[in-house]
Image 1 (cartoon, helix red, strand yellow):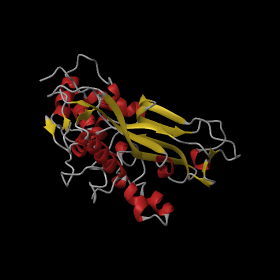
Image 2: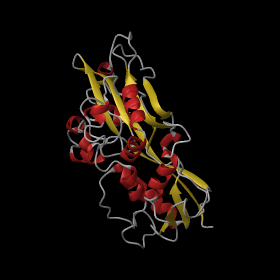
Image 3: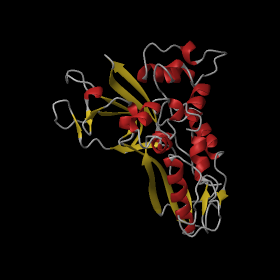
Image 4: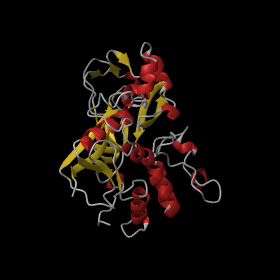
Length: 312
């Protein structure tokens, strides 16, 4: 057993550091990773809480936020892909969003990468904190009954995290469990020498494919790989180059990081400041107005971070 301790995503400190929450969070994450899994070649994916892990290399595994399966299925009708992508149930690349409108145009889009495990544990130990965070980030109208409708049990799919707003993931395979699960998947052939040998590959999402192929490649080099600390899903960055205001000028910086930091954001809102004379829905990308949150999600770079090193 090492002295390693898993930190909260983005090193969030939503409660005092004397709370039992942080120790319990460490144990919840550690339970999701076995001591060592030979995922491909001579190396392994390991749990740094159970085995000493060197940090010789750090790597950000990246992909984009819009559903790759939808883009593939509707490659000849991208507008249809954007339209369908507004459904949280298909926001499958570890990025979910909620769109707000004024006068039938988008006024704000909020993106999140926060996992249900974090919020379930926080709600179990500190329900009053969960209520306060909802009221701060989603709406002052949120009530305790909205979030804890029966026997004071937290209801993740409450209206303020679905139809009326967004706080954390609700899509069924967006979770810390799924991130760490796919990270430990064994390369199917078990004898691949490179990425080509690992084909055919059955997973459709951009995220899972990127995580699998990158971890397998590091493992084949004989390295031990583990989630960087703090583990989680992050918005690494975004690219709004070429986006224009209604008058044709380049857009200003309308990205606001609400939780996390730039380069490691957990919650981001995209909104034009009041007084600018236009809304998000008036911004043009490639000469076309933003009609869907997916138009923006496609330009967000997602990331999961790993470290690797030679076996001790």
